[in-house]
Image 1: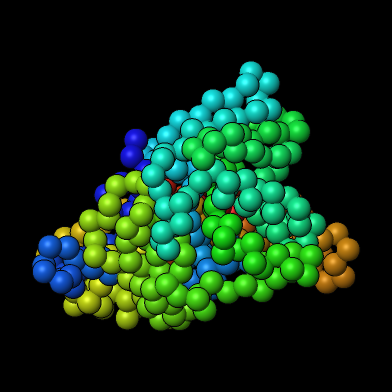
Image 2: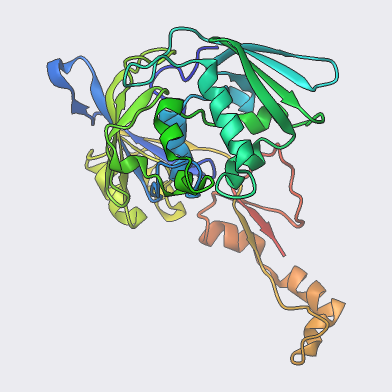
Length: 351
């Protein structure tokens, strides 16, 4: 399948845990000439940094997926498919994986994108795994080394077979060696200190580059003309951070944004069926639970240690009422921690 086809897969699913996503119809700012438009996305999550060695916020990963090459990504049905890697093979023992990369890609500054960039990113992550690059190194669990037999072939060798190895690589972002190699001083510490957002437009190899960055404002993604995949159908994508969902939904209704990544449960019914608004209800993984202190060493309220009290909480929890009132019907009650993973539930209620 085509890598990051159409606009951008992550641009319409910016928060994987969102249960409700709304799209406004008829909005959008026209680009010059009117041929393409700007996709305006609203979110209540912000981009903390464009440095993947330190980023932990929800939208950090969204940004990385938009600007950095990925070997593979999740497609429809949460099935792994090729992105920069058009195909791959592995030895029967799972120790050697060979990725055949899509040719012709360049970084947004015109420098060729090759397998050497992936090798550098892997080698650097492993070299400083006990310090600055520990986060990315965790994604490369089991990786022993990497090599590039030619510009379009990447070979990754594992010390031992890793069952979720391919899934782990979905979280692996390839960095431009010619930019990041200048920031490996201080035993790798400079890698964490580097702030790409201070050097715009950002050098990117994915479908977009970033020309404007505001942590608590609007970040602008412009198409990378040298992207190895399909060209963007948008003149740009803007991601605007809102401090609350009320103002975000109001801007959606006013067509000041085209897509919002999460709608509060209380607004779901109001938006459903509204002209010009499409409400997309997706399975979420939010878990709401009732907990109480049952530590046997606690000096007070010893009655909470009684199993009968726990059983009483079990029967007294008004799951159906909570679903109807708190979640406005966008949830399903469950009575245990492990709810069916394939059920189309929108939140889990448990005692």
